[in-house]
Image (cartoon, one colour):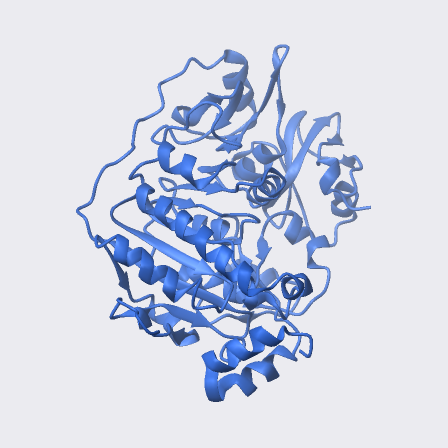
Length: 450
């Protein structure tokens, strides 16, 4: 790429040495496209059996695949949340540590949601994901992706990390810090990253990253982990930031990432004045070594004894009969302990994790809005709870009714009257209200095909 900043090129030549020509050659090739199967909705084997386009496994992500097809966002499988399009290098940080299914996980800088949804796929029914994004418009995108993928036990928040640290002291088993950075690793994919690059921006980003890491240290439990990640190559934002953090926090240690990520990446870089003896445990993802863009990651372990931290349960609430009647009529099975009221509306969320009123952008699965003696169901309710619906309209990918539904039209339905879920190959797309064999469309207007 001939338009790379001269100062950046000089820095990279120093960084890579004899490997720089290989990096330069890689930058002349097109970006790599990839997707990740949403295993909360479909198994990898079932997806491979039904996927209508060619995919190739990513070696370090069990549910990740390379692909080349255009406009996959219009495919019904994408609408149904069966996969998430994600840059392959960006999948590596969530693979650094083996996530336990009952962990509480925080993603501090989460939008648009790739790493968050990847982590949620690793959690079981008892696991909780909190995804934070400070910019409201990006938080809406983050929430929309979580809704599309039908993820349960997920919370989105919109606040700075200092407030997060005050809300959730010593709470999480794992904290993902995908820190805002100078974006050097995205130059091949995003031209704007090139135009915005400067040494001053690198320095500014490093200062901001240090602040975010300080807050991450406050919310992670003893025995827990922080994954620190950026999509840049600069030592100031990567190894130096990690080294400075460890100097201030002797209770943390830099530990090796998983073997599968090690095989796809290069070691961290030692630099003059580095105090961390094992800085090479950090990993660098280069486009000339693996298929993808640039990425840095470091796995930090809190060596303190495991602490319980913040774990108050939600106070049991009286649930209006109109809500339970709606759920009893709509769902074949559900856990009544998960039915709560948050900010005035019914949600489906674990009672084991307390979310203070007004702090969450989204809390669990939004069931709907309580109106005069009835519930107006939310799209997320169909997407996340569709498997448990009593009334289902399952359509094949080539069924004309499927495309009519995605366009917002009503379709014929051979099922009893009431709220029903429309699905493709068994995976929920959205909702309809069935009346006398006609399914009235409730697919959100902003998601429809035109």
